[in-house]
Image 1 (cartoon, rainbow, N blue to C red):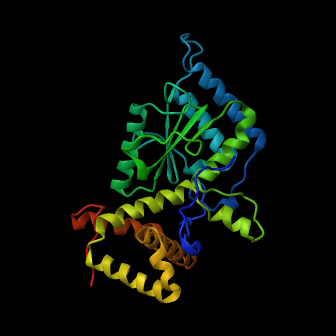
Image 2: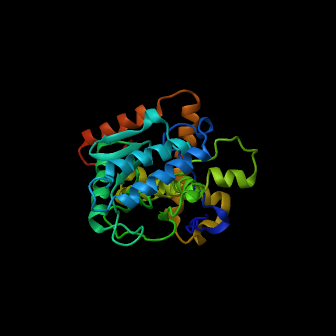
Image 3: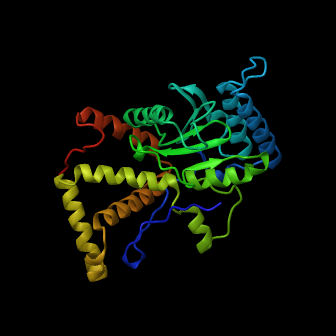
Amino acid sequence: MTSEKTAPKSTGDLTMVTKTRSLALSGQPTAALGHDEAAMAKAAREMLDRHDRAVVTDADIKASEADIRSCIRDLLLASGLARREDIQLESQRTDLRTGQAIFEVKRRIGLVGAEPSPENLEQLDGYLDEAARTGRPERLGILADGRHWALRPSSETGREFNASQVRTFTLRTEHDAGDWLTWMRDRIGAHSASPETPSRAAVGRSFGTTEAALNEIAELRGLYDANADNPTVAVKRGLWEDLLGSALGEVVSQTDDPDGLFVRHTYLAAATALALQASFGLDIEGIAAADHRRLKAYGRGARRIPSTD
């Protein structure tokens, strides 16, 4: 299954959309994770059974949301997308949390297929907004009823749902478990557990336009738009344009969205710096948490940043 979402275009192929981390939902390097096809099929079969029994009237056989949630947990474990110790059930008012994702489980996520109802979407948006306010890592929300799955990036909370193939998946039979895994990997940026020989195609798969990366870039663009008049930001934006202009000449002036290009280059620089710091053993998650506390103490919220000399 291929994603319908394409990368933003700019002159000279300057668009560089990357991931901050090549991690699975568990937050751990995916090289340590693998999937068990037989266990995936079993978990998918049981999950679909719970889905079908979730709306029957016979109390003796009726399945609960907790039953579906248990099957989702089993599927995440069998697929290698999460480790048992990293899955948190019924934590922070959410049904299931692991790594950068929040799962909200319903008997039915909407009235028709995989398109979620407004009330379910509003509930998930609230959890994503709360995670952002409190500095927790979850930035992707997933509504699921076992058969239907709908992805919600934190950068789109409060907006109308994008009901496209990119954002939804329908698990019709247990034999679709492999397609479900591909869909999840494409959305969250998890990769194969087997090491790949470096190639252009392999780099594209590992550092491509996943929903996780696109969501982070969208959030970074929101921060830039809210702080474009900040003197420090304005100086860095000007220096970037001068340096890029010196290197590429008039190509920069022909770019349709120079601010967007600046944000994407900023994201690439930040991702590279984080990877380098992590390779030296620095606690980048602890540093990020400290930065979040500093911004809260500054008193202007996470959407505004203080000027620096």
